[in-house]
Length: 462
Length: 178
View 1: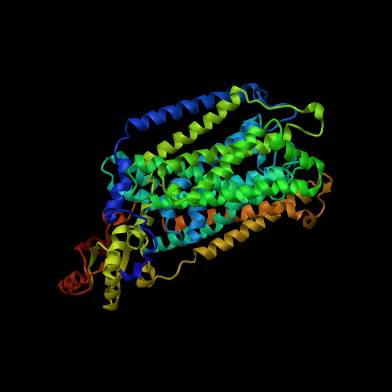
View 2: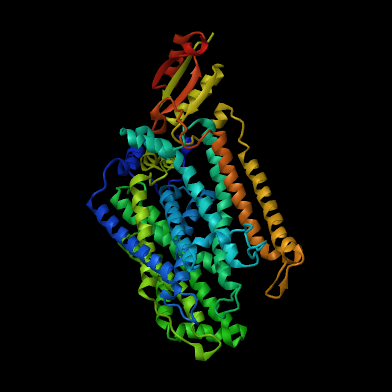
């Protein structure tokens, strides 16, 4: 027992009187029982939204990008906004599982599986947008450095858009193997419990024959640690490179050296907000309150508050630098952003991202589940508007006042965005019913140090 | 000599570690241990050599880094040098800064994927592989030691019961030896 000692000041991460077997039962329950009516309602709504999006994508590909609201001045709008928004959301998963693993934060174990699932699902949504925007998506493989029939014409390695291709494909595939490797022991647990032959077959297939030998576990832990070490700089590099898409341009409002850290902080901010949104519902519906406790929610709120403040600092720094640079175009871009025709988008961004998370300083508020849920949604709305503000307000009034214009989305723009939200939730809802949503093997390994039962047992003993 | 294998079940990780220590002190041979989660200190208790998979990952990363440099040097400098944005690509070193992001990405890509593949191959994990844990409870809450029975089975059983074993199953090895 003494080898599992943990300071009493640390709150338990597994609530209630749980044994190893109870953990298996609780995690396997959503998979072994049929979904209820609410799940079907949510799934149907998501599926309809997804199908609407598919229709709009087919229309775009059939008709052309002209079906979007883009014009001569604003050549990038909702597509890239949605791309950056989804990629940003996709950052929390790796952050939770990799960075918190390196910092030995045990509270990651209750949430890392779902956060990584969210990462993969949202990177899929993000990847859709640049591919649709190509106009001829069936030629998407031209992005890869492959010899082609036109002679030795290669891709341009000086272009941040190509860096993006490499960064995002590396991020997606590495996140996927990180996720799947962690899933093996949990799939094996489901496999060994399964009674129905079909279920047993499926989980045998996906668990890759995991047996849990001592040597396997030794390698498993080393692989997880090294993957975390690789994924940590990777996750920072991905959004850094996304920000280069803008920062290496010469457009006032985009040409800013603060972009990489600012984008990374914003990504963590919106990613944690999305994890919060999803897990507050998941823990309730799947009855996992013992594993995703109020302590987890509070810690995530603190991260949202901190990253929100970093983002706020970045907004103010941008304004200051625009003034201090003495470049009148830069000054105009930021003045126009805050007071021009898109002032309402700027105002929404400021209130949602900078002001709203500040209420988390109050303990009563950050431990309230309903307020946490509302704030998490507000933050994601705000982060969508941040990308919209950066992209559209920097473009819509360029150097030539005769070409100044506004952007208004068509129903196709809106449809594709709604479609990706639907697709995301379709994937997440299917995941919640077929995957072990908590890394049960890892949770079992901290039961004796961080379980409520063992902690109180130790406290009473001393 | 030892004809049989024993499957000894435990229901607690701390008792398992203590038992392994005592079994090894008595010079019994342990074939394998199956656990539902990573038990801290199990590899040391069993005397397993540390894994070299991190070293492999480092080497894979170096390969990825080299591949990235060779690829971009060939494509951008050797095969078809172009003047992009007033920045002609006639020397690798002067164009190198804009190649850094992809050098990094490819280092990570090679290191991560080849390391995971090595892990899967070494630990025999792939789709359609049959699981080899002898008792399905070892992925739930039980810990199993697969060991050789030695000469005196009854003495061993009493000893194992004393270390905290929940159940002991004798597995006949006869078909292998015939």
